[in-house]
Amino acid sequence: MEKNNVKVTFGGNPVTLLGKEIKVGDSAPDFTVINNDLKPVKMSDYDGKVKVLSIFPSVDTPVCAAQNRMFNKKAAELENTAILAISNDLPFAQKRFCGAEGIDKVVTLSDHKDVDFGKKYGFLIDELRLLARGVVILDKSNKVHYVEYVSEIGDEPDYDKALEALKEL
Image: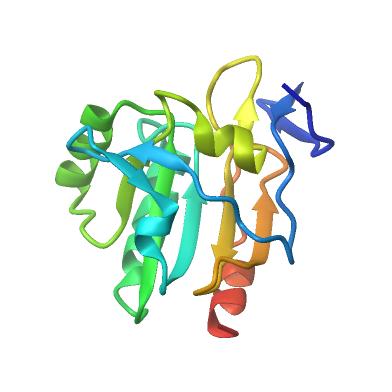
């Protein structure tokens, strides 16, 4: 599998991202992940909506929890927008987390089975088989309008920049 050129660190140590780097202006490739009921879900299931792909390593870390809480709060203010939170966590852990945290606007999706999303968008960490942290924003026709690969996986994304990109759609 191809390595991409995005430079990120995890705990200060460089990691290797596999898959094709996604860029602003790209047509976003469809991908298949698993929902909390263990059913396959495709990005194309959300066609006709603006999509925020909120990508993170694991719901069981404070930064990932903060990222999901932030997008859940902001999602309540958005119309015709799907917030898809994607990690390699098992669907059971995602469901438990959402129930415990009252996350009800964000759709948590697991890429653990086939890492289809991670490979197609270049977020798969080779050394850990986790996803790097980031945000990708797609318009209703799946054109990429914003991409952030967070340079240190332990840091939160730039919510302000992501929300600015969303307001433009």
